[in-house]
Image (tube, rainbow, N blue to C red; front, side, top):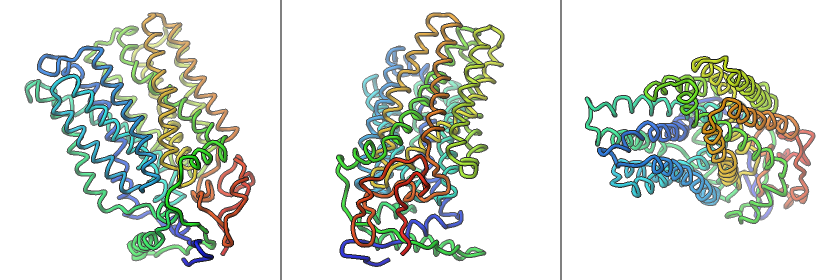
Length: 510
């Protein structure tokens, strides 16, 4: 690294990071940062599982309406937390924020265990959601920027899919903690929330060993710190058999800057990359509607149409958790080898087609509770990697200076448009009591997924095995003579990674 011109920095740090073999360092990144989705799954499941205990006099004596309001408080906190902390993550750095957001989660979920009335419970749930929402922005950014390009897709999908391990853990924990033979009824639900705080506390210790993102550092003028971090990672790995691969030729040129104004962020998201913004919004909204509409109302479907008692509902939800976790693990590597566009198109389309077929069979009355569950488990085997790929697409598609805020913004918009509307629409359809009406809801969700597949096929980005800088050049990128005017004219081509649809290749050969 050296000064290529006054105020301009030449570096090959992104190339050095992307050529690294998988190591213990990368495994630490996955464990220490990927816990976020497990915590989210744990929190959502805990609230549903302990709702009965919270409605008892030994709990907080909450009404049905207050249980629903508490869930909305958590979701509202997650959306607002993602937006606020997403902005701060791009401005202050990944590491600072993934400590702050986890700290907020720890304090809020511990406080939830100490709730004394309905109002305090809702406030603490809102703050817990804010911590988790902030984690989404900070953690997705850091993972993208620390994991080598050829592993980025499978890693991101596997981590997002780990939500369902948290969901299964939450269900398992409450089976024991809510057993009055083991703990008093007024204590069990409090201990259940305390388990999330204990788990998060252990992860807080692991995160002490993670560095700041070198990619964030170099575009914010802290190149010596970035060089030190990458050098330390390389020293840890080069002692392994085979050593380190050679560094690819070429350098990047940056004009160091402090932070990016919100106006520049808006230009990058919606003027420079309008089709990527549309793609992210479509993918996020479709998967959010599918998941929230079906998953959060399935207990009502089982009870109303198949007379499954409340105590047996969990047995039918378990296959959902299994296939949701397995889908990203099994199919994830194909997103790096076969490619993003064909796999995202396929997973969205297949899950939509399976849902439409299963909905039709349900409307005909030819399914049992078990067979409908198996069909939906197959739907979610494909929908889970599809949903995770929505986050992957957004986090890859925009420059490093805007990455966290972009993740937060599209998460918030997708949740608002699809996540909130889904349960409301399906709850109304189930209340009507007819299979045909509910089938129309399934068809609508299927149409959204198939439509998203078509949008991906038309304007999806071929970002597999490409450096983040070639998919979306940082706003600080220049050539070695000064700012490249073509940055302002870059069109939003179909291909990423310096393909034919790009206006230029930001990796100059030095």
